[in-house]
Image (cartoon, rainbow, N blue to C red; front, top):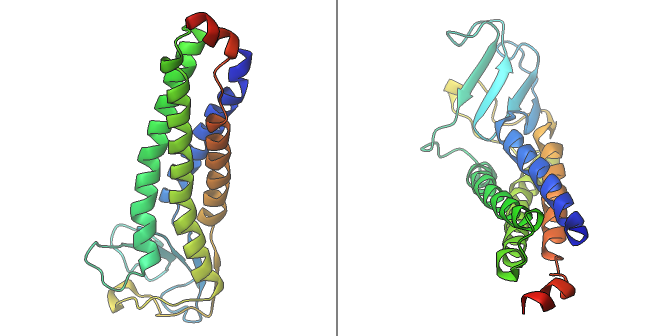
Amino acid sequence: VNTTHLQLAAFALGTIGWILCTVSMGIVEWRVWHVDNTTVISSGIAWVGIWKVCFISYLHVSPGYREQFCHKFSGYDSFIPHEIYAAQGLLLIAMFIGLLGLAATVFALRNVYMGITHKTLIAPFFLVGGFFYVLAGLCVLIPVSWNFYSVTHNQSIAFPPSYYMPSSPVAQEAGAAIPVGIVAVILLLLSGTFSLSYRFPMATNAITK
């Protein structure tokens, strides 16, 4: 059991990392745009996410919303930049792969704590879980770093008129989803490293042989 303490920590870190990955998908604040036209965008701030764009408006431009106007992206929108499309796909993949990693780790830990001494029922599942954690971390790292690059270079998005958004902001900054994604990457990569470092105990291995 002592040899699995690191893998138990890997499971805990992987679980938190997977949760943060899922949370980052739902946060609309990937990019925070500061705009000078406050006629529609009353607060002068708009939030650009990977699924939709939102801002506060006192003109009630959207039925069903008192102040917040949100416009969801469509898969057919050609104006959406590549980094947003990449984030949509890669984060979904990361969520699925991370879940597989958690399942593999749970199965291996279950076998260890139940006293099962067959190497083939423990070591391969820790390694597979570690591989999935690392892969999930990389799938989160790519869109997070790509979108952060776009923010730091103040890149524009050619929104159509129906979005009530300017094509470029006066300034923009990284929203809450970026640091959440960065923490998720760190935890998933750490979890993967811990899981991949598992070595089956030699004493137990000798007995099973």
